[in-house]
Length: 473
Image 1 (cartoon, rainbow, N blue to C red):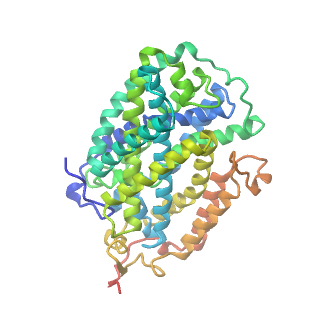
Image 2: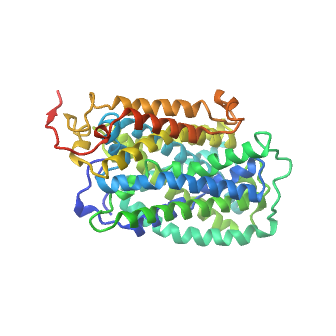
Image 3: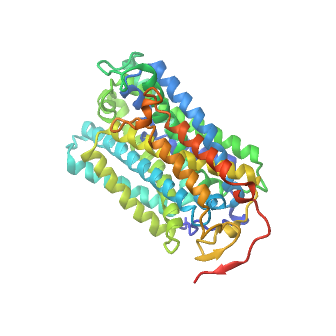
């Protein structure tokens, strides 16, 4: 299979051969991994029992899908990735906001997937063959996982699609068997001696809904376009693409997350997940668990790395997608080592997803408002001005930036960060929200409202007669 050569340039119609079923397969197969499963452990680590964990995760996921899934329709129209597409609203240089947000989201989730997958691999191999668990062993396993992931990401979309289709079947079977493996130890009670993280039920429940449920769909706010740019709007309807995206996100996220909640309760994993998961596993499930940790991690982290490569390619147009992917793979591996050797899993995960949700949500809301305003009508050539190191076009706005859109995002993100509650940091606005984390709602509401008020429809990206492009100096 040849290495994909396309970066963030416009995909020709002849190459847009994927369909809604491929969207479901890639969203399902790539998410059936420990990097997503571990989010089901978060509510338990916060002190919630079975039903509180389930309701918070399901509620957060459904709300997140409702906000996130429509973004898939943007790249269906533009035939390029979402950060580049957002240039229609932020400007062809202002779209770097989306590229940076996407890069940070993918970087964090890649590191998390390799971190958790590597820890389970080490623990499983220690029980199977007596592999010594220590810093050197973890380092080697992390490096091997990262190398396999980088190879898959460099080869690109077609290989990752095939891998996701296989993982959708294999991982479903492995998780179904896992339910039987841990059923004997399952309890519906909260893990003993694990108090509510925020002191009382409702603030902790809301934290779980955001950190464990909502964060899953939000992780895809810049990724969905990586897949739908290969779907042709001439052969597939908007309704079928939207339905496939919703189905893929809901099933692909809830199945592994709820498996994580089930196994966390069964393994009494209130303070840690990977260690208790391996320790509670019956001997006959160790090999399936090892396969799940390895294959699932490569599939999920591969897609994240692929997206990171596109985002870095968008930031640095002179870089090729393959080279950009290798660079971000190295950076993600460094973050894995930092996570293992210098951080607490629960605090690191929770803080990361809450902060990135606050930053990413207003960008997603502004992009959706712009898409609705322009009726899905774009000038694909004008979106590529920055990539071609040119100037001008209908999305040039002011020196390539849309100041009002960028300011709306920045203010929304700032308000979100000022309202977030993490294990490491309590923001000042929490005193006004009763200690409940409303960062997601406030950041999206403020950013979207400001954008709607400050920008007339004409500035939102509606295509008129294209202006002549001016060559770069």
